[in-house]
Length: 279
Image 1: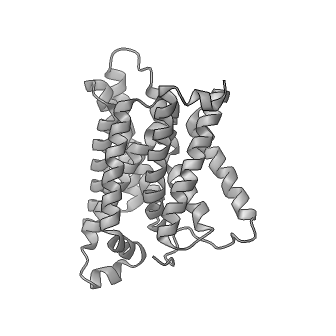
Image 2: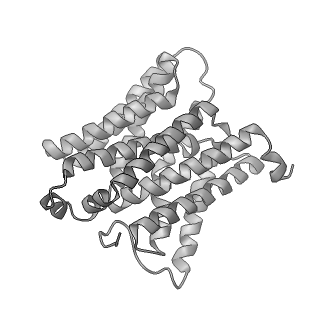
């Protein structure tokens, strides 16, 4: 069946909308993740979210709602302890990563019945996103867009020089915790499409590609969103026609695109969190 005929089906329209929502979150928040060198911490938040998925199955409510609760709790706890107590970040990441996964596994073990779509939360399934999840994803995206728009300069300030930001009277700790909360919300949006296992990749690959083409944070956000959208739609097409996991298809396409960009003569500028970009 021709793809343009396929998109007339409701599940495919839902998948395309999910691709757009995920692209916005990946480009917007992923750029801040890379700029602040918070990739490993983001991985800890993502895997802690598995506890919320298990909670949703156990108490029979939307697993993404549970994932949002666990992600926010893990992110804020990690940020607060790192700021106030000085606990090593890698230790915190390991504890929250393992603890969240363990809670999720135990709750799923205690949940009776067959969990038909459980694997989609681990590895992603873009063509299996229900309407209820789209509403949640859209709401989170709107909230993140508003926050980033209203606090754009402040987020840039803490991303590139926290000491200077503090000297200007900015609430650095509060902004740092807010950034972690944004990451937690973005994790929930990405989970349904690429799964918990590959969330980090979609946060980092599009900004890394865009960062090869420009050093402006705003332009990287826009470029990363466009690249993520392209990858998502490409992964959707591959997933439908070849019956493969959408998350893996999206990320592999991203890896190949990044390799191609590296070979382009005009894309030799480096960006990977070096705090040198202009706003």
